Image (cartoon, rainbow, N blue to C red; front, side, top):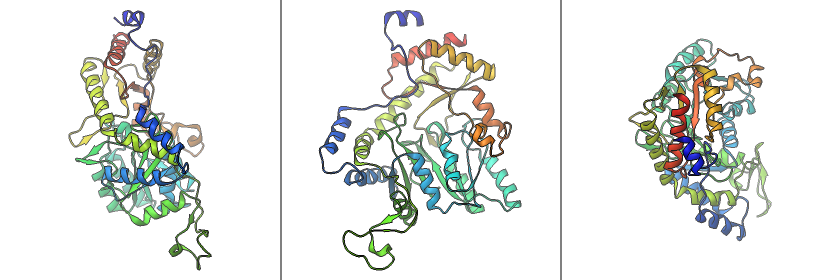
Length: 397
C-alpha cells in the first residue's frame, strides 16, 4: 500500500514533523505594518499583548523577541541570581534550564513522570524534602508543559506555597491548551507563564515569546528589562525629568523587544488559534485510533487537561534506543519526517561539565531512548496522516 502511494504521487515526498500555517490574511496584516509608520515596537505589539491576555484571562502580557528571552527576563524579574537555585525538567529544550544560568543561579532538574513526560510531582515533593533539610530550596521552579499537555499545576502550586518558591510555567508548547477547564496562561497556579511563537509552535510570530502574569510588579519589571532597563515614566526616575525627550536607565536590561512586524502576524494568527488546536486534536485522535494495535505507548490523556497537541510523541515498547534508531531511519527513508523530543538536558556536554551525569534522572533517560515524534500540524491532510500510519505499520510489523 505504501509503495503504491509513493508511485502514484498521492503524498508529499517528505512530511515534516511540524510546519507553520500562514494565510493570506497573515500576509496582509504584515504588509499593512510594512506600509505604516511603525516597524519596531509600536501599537501592534500592545494590541497583541492585550489580545493574548484577554484570550488567557490574564491581567498582563509582555511580548518579547523569543521565548528564551522571556524565560530569562522573568527569572531576572523574580530576582533569581548568584547563590540561588532554579529547578526545571530534564525533558525540555535547553532554554528552560539555560535561563537560570544566565542569571548566575545554580540549575538542577526534577525527573519526569513516566506517563505524562512532565515534571513528576512525586519526584518534586521528595526533592523538596531533601532540599529543605539541606537549606537549599529552589527560588524558582519551571515546570514544562511538554507537547502541549499541562503539568499538574494545582499540586505544584501547593508545594510552592509550602516551601516558598516561585513558579514559572514554561508553556512554550501549550498555547491554546486548558487545565481544569481554564486556559493555560491564566496563571491561576503560578507567578508567570511563558509562551513561544516559533514557527513550529501552535501560533507563530516568526520568532517571538511572551510572559503572562497577574502580578503588576512582575509585569512592570519585565517591561523595563526587555528594553535596556530604560524608563520614560517620570514616576520611576531619579530626580526630575529634563523634558519630553528624556529617559533614564534604571536597571541593567536587554534588547528583547518584539517588533510590530512580528506582532501583526501574531494578532492575525491568534484569531485562528482555536481552529489550529481543534485540527491538531482531530489529527491526534485519528493517530490514537489508528496506532492502538501497534507496540507503542501513546501520548497521555487526562480528563482535566486538554492538550494543545504541539507534538504527538509515541514510545517504542520494545528494543530501546537501538530499535528507535532503526525505526527513525526507516521512516525517514520513506519520507516521514519523524523527530525526537528531547535529549535530556543534563546529558548535554555543557551540563556534564557542570557535574551532571547520565543516570541522574533515569525516567527522562528511559523516555529519551524510546521516544519518537510523529508529524502533526494543522495543514496536514488525512491522506498524509494515513501515509504516516501505513509507514509505521510496515516498519513495526
